[in-house]
Length: 198
Length: 241
Length: 201
Image (cartoon, rainbow over all chains, first blue to last red; front, top):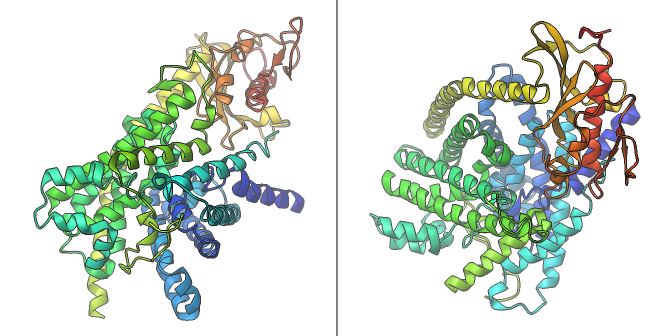
C-alpha cells in the first residue's frame, strides 16, 4: 500500500519535472524564463519563490474548489478564484519577505509581484483540477511542477551566461538568440517523452 | 505610476495625448508596439497553441475579444476603482471576461475549445491584458480603450497567425488543414513539437526585427512591476545594446 | 479604517457583479453544452454499432476490471433494435503516449464482431501517434469486422501469413498502437461476459 503510494508520488514528480516540464513542454512561465535567466542566482531565486507560491496556491485552490465551488455547482468561478488566491498570496509573501528577510526581498526585487501574472502559477491549479487529483496528489504534482520550473530556469540561465560571452549578430541579440537556445534545451528534454509509458 | 508608464515604453502613449487618434492606436497595436513581437508579452499561448494556423487564429481572436471588453469595462470604472485595489480589480474583471469567452466557446465552437484546452482560462495570466489595462484603459476613455484592446489583440493575433503558419506548413505540410506539401515530402514534425515553438517564435521575431529595424533586449513583462512602477537595470544578454 | 473600507467595498462590488454575469452566462450556455455532448455521444454510438437504434446504460459490476484492457472501460451501453439485443458499445479511456490518454468508443456485435472504433479526444504525437489513429492509414482498418476466436494480440512486424487476430503495431508508434489495442481487447473481453440476450452472466 505504502509502496504503491510512494511509486505514484515518484512517478508524478518525475513526470512533472522531465516529461511534462512546465516551461519546456507546456510553455507556462515563459516570461520569467526569458526575462530572468540572465543570471543563475536570480533564476534560482525566482524558481524557489514560484515553487513556494505554486504549492501553497494549489493547496488553497483545491480546498476552496472542493468545499465551496463544486458543491454549489459554481465551477465557472474557478478561474477567478484561483487568480485571486494567487494575487493575495503573492501580496502576503511579499509583505512577509520584506519584513523578515530583507536581503532576499532586495535580491528578488520586482520579480516577486510579477509571479501574479505567471502562467505557470495559474496553470498548475487548473491542471490539478483537470486531472482530478485529490489534495495530496495536487500538492505532490505542484511541488514537482515547481521543481521542474526551477530546473528549467537554472539550466537555461547557465546556457545564457555562456552565450553572453559569444559574439552574436545585432539582429539576433537578446530575445531571438535566447529563443534559439531554448529550442535546443527543449529538444534535449523532449527525449524524456514516453519515459513512463509502456 | 506615470514613471512606470514611461518605463513600459510609455513614450508612444504620451504622444497620444489626451484624445488618442484611432489611427495611432491601430499602428501601435499592430506594428510599433506589437505586444508579442516587440514587447514580448503573452508568450505562453504564443508557443503553446500555435501548432496549427486555425488554433493560433482562434486563440488570437478569443484573446482580442477579452481584451476589447476588459479594456472598455476597466476604462468605464477607472474613476471609481481606488488606487489600493487597482490590480485585484483589474484581475477580477479580466477573469470574468475570460470565463465568459470560455463558456461561449464551449457552447458554439467546441472544436476550438478542445484544441486550446487549458490555455483559454490561462488568457487571464496573459501579461498583455493587465499591461493594457494599466497603460491605456486606466488613463483613457472607454471607446479609445476599446480600440486599443482591439488593435493590441489584432497585433497579438497577427503574431500568433505568423508563428502558427510557419509551424503548420513546415511541421505538418498543411495550412488550416488544407494539404499543401504533406504528400510531397515528409514534414519536419519537430516544428509542431515544443522545440519547434521556440524556433518559430525566434524566427518570426528576427524577421520582425529586420523589417522594422528594431531590437528587443529584455522582455518588458519580466522587468516591470505593476505595483512599484520601477524597472530593474538588467544588462541584456549579449552585452551592451 | 475608512481608507480600507471603501476599497474593500468596491472590490466586493466588482466581485459580486462579475459573479452574477458569470452565473447568467453559465446557466445560459449549460443546456447547449449538455445537448452537444449528448449528441456527440449518440453519434459515436450509432457510428460504431450501426445495427442498433436504441442504447441503454449498463450498470458495470463491481470489480469487473480484472486486467489492463478491462480497466480502460468507463461505460458500456447495450444496443438493441426492436427489442432484440444487437451488441454493446464501450466507452474507453486508454493510456497513450500523452498522459491524458485516448478516448475510444468501440462497438461489438452479439456475435463478437468488432464493428467500429470511434476515436475521441486525444493528444498523441502529431505525425506519429495521430497517424496510427487515422482511419485512412494501415493500422485502424485491421480491426474492421474482425471476429477473433480468442484474444487480440499486438505484435511487431507481423508476417503476411499471420492470423487476423494478431494486430500489427505501427513501427515507431507502438505506444499509441497499444493504446487502441488495449481498449478494443477490453471491449471484447467484456462482451464475452454477456449472455446472447445481452444480460450480465
